[in-house]
Amino acid sequence: MSFFWSHAACGGIFPVMSGILIEGGRVIDGAANPPFDADVFVEGGAIRAVGREAAALAAQSTAVARIDARGRTVMPGLIDAHCHVSFDEPQSNDELFFHRRAGLAAIVAARNVRRLLRAGVTGFFDADSIFELGIDLRDAIESGVIHGPRMATGGYALLTSVGGTAGRLLPDEGGVGYARIVRTRDEIVREVRRQIKMGVDWIKVHVTGLVPRQRDTGEIQAWSFDELRAVCDTAHELGIPVVGHCRGARSTRDAARAGFDLILHATYMDEEAFSAVVERKVPIAPTFTFQANLADYGEAVGASADLREVFRREIEESAAQLRQAYDAGVPLLCGTESGFSLTPYGEWHYRELEVFVRDIGLSPLEAIECGTRAGARVFGLDGRLGTVAAGQLADLIVVDGDPSKDVTVLGVPGAVRYVLVGGREVPLEDLDPPRAAIPGWRVSEYSRKVLDRAEAKRGSR
Image (cartoon, rainbow, N blue to C red):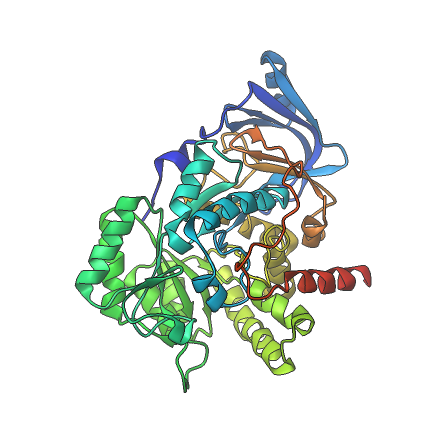
């Protein structure tokens, strides 16, 4: 099933100049082809030409801006398929649920999306947001009220009363933070329809969660198959796709069979789950960045060796199956879960590509394709976004270094030199004032400790 949205699909959401000629760069096209030297001409929000024709078309246009990309790489902008832009880097669910205010959260989120741009992220998917503010943030970006990447959004995540990963902090009915509890089929249908009326691009279901005295590997499935089908049937009838948080074999299997359009995590698959995903070619966003950060840098924030090992094993035990799914034609998308204290905005959006290379065994160019072209499906723009080719929407970045050899160069501070979204160059100057502490906003802050440990490790290489 294909889904399209009027604003995100048009490519004309930003005012653009007559044209932009990106000259002399080394092009990574986002389709896993070998890099090549070429000019790129952008006009009217789209790429008009790549190669010899680019300069000729630019010569025929008026008011053409020029970007000198000599010695640099031109590539599609990164698409982060799992980013919580409204959370503002909480350390705990307690902080996220009880130390946030709707108005201020929206203002802070509008600031944080600029950090994504400076990291080379030209598109992102926020599957669930506190106070459902993702809808208004997306509309503000699309209408030019604020600078931000292309955005697709959900509303509240749907949960049953069993809960998700926040345990007893979640109520048995109603909602809190990013979550809305649904208890019956009628409530499921009513909430899905309400969110679609409000303007969501996706419906998010928290299919699995954690319970006391749990014996299952991963997380326990908190929904019946019939309930999952009810979500999909209701959403699909209204043209909206469904995404599910699934950590565990049965949940991944049932989500695939129920008709989910994207699965987040899909770890601990057994043969039945694997077969269901491969048969239906359900896209997966493994979102290993959070686990990788905790495994590699968790000592800096006091995580025990046992906990770090649990997260490391989740990657190791799932990587081979995900590679097999990829080889069988299942799209893998890069999502980072940016928005938590372990994954602060603007810092780790390249990290999933690194994990795809290091642990899943993809080449850098294959990983880049997962982080660009494959991610276009979150906007319903498969085949129209995420590659450097004539006719594609012009979401592009120019970076120092060669990501085709080492994807981590995308994480070097200042490496991203130019960003275009919808054919418009976005200013990257840091005009935001230094941010001070907001009273009552945090219970603790340790994002900086993780970054310091990562920078020290990078410097010792």
